[in-house]
Image (cartoon, rainbow, N blue to C red; front, side, top):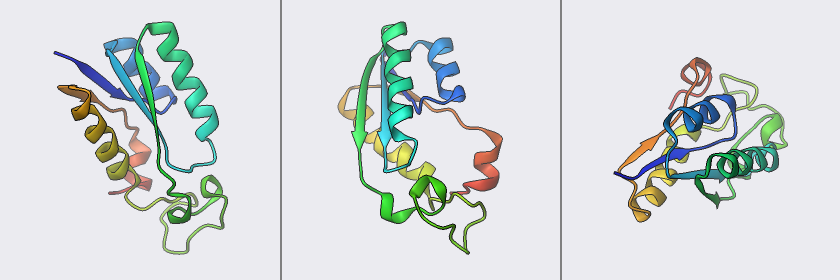
Length: 120
């Protein structure tokens, strides 16, 4: 069974990469300010662990707000950095590509703050 990982390059997804050792990982550049560093970290982890790695680039920069979107915070946002439905978008894009790559299980990593600050 082929496994995959939505790999942001952050601590949660890197820990899953180390723990589960999926055969494939995908990183999504959706226009966030930290995209360059996230892609670099994800690529290095995949290189070290022997995981095939892909990057999907989708320009959603005009849809977010706050520092990570190079904009002022949105008054409607529950956090200063807010991308409405970001997690749903990332999982959908990763899932679409995972299916095309014949991945049967897609791992994702979330942190408690996602449920509080990025409700989808």
